[in-house]
Image (cartoon, rainbow, N blue to C red; front, top):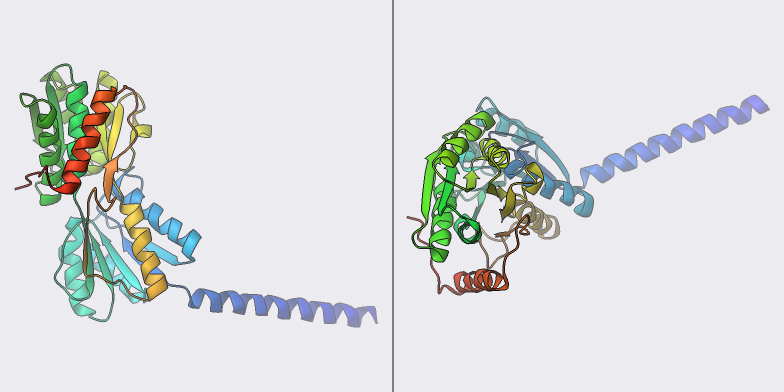
Length: 325
């Protein structure tokens, strides 16, 4: 009798396990899935890629989506994108302007697949595009840099000769000159987003030339520049994410490019509506797509805070325009 009861219990537990497994499988099958190809430097860059990844992690926790990601340090973007398409995701994301050509090539081959391009604009019907007004947020960083500079010399380091990087540069320069028209801006193009040693070398060159605030828009190369600024005992500005924790004795503020929020919001729309409503989005100060991280390490006077607030309002209203060409 005991043996019979034991067999029955084992069968009941097995059935429950199968039912649970089947239920979980059905639940997962009903969830929206997203695949993302990260930009060149991949996870751990402390800015661009990590921000997008945070947005998807939040969507997984709050919206119940599933996601997978790929990195392509070898530059073979099409292969990685094709791999994500083969997984039959509801949305495939290409992160970064350098991925645009590959994304468009794959999108043409799969007209029924939905794609999202971040940091570039595509005319293809099955690609939704998101761009940011980096120049607006960088304008505010330039103001802070000029307010706190003692040498009247600032440094900018770009990761590539590309429109998105030029927006960082132009905004930073014009924001600094809005505060101090005679301030000097040293500019260098690293032509590399993944070389911290190179970033450190360029930053040190600018520091020797008198720069006492370094603003790099160069991914992991920029991390090296920020850390060199800290070692030299000068201020710096971060990009994309709040990079204060990369160099807590140097990073005064960061230009927040709110990729995580944009990714989350579009995922939320996809989940609730089954589609993304617009073909393109351009996010700036008005849309809360860019902004300033908290100012640390130095105190802004009430007058300086007021000037930054007034400039923000004027940029939003169009009274202050930033030339990016």
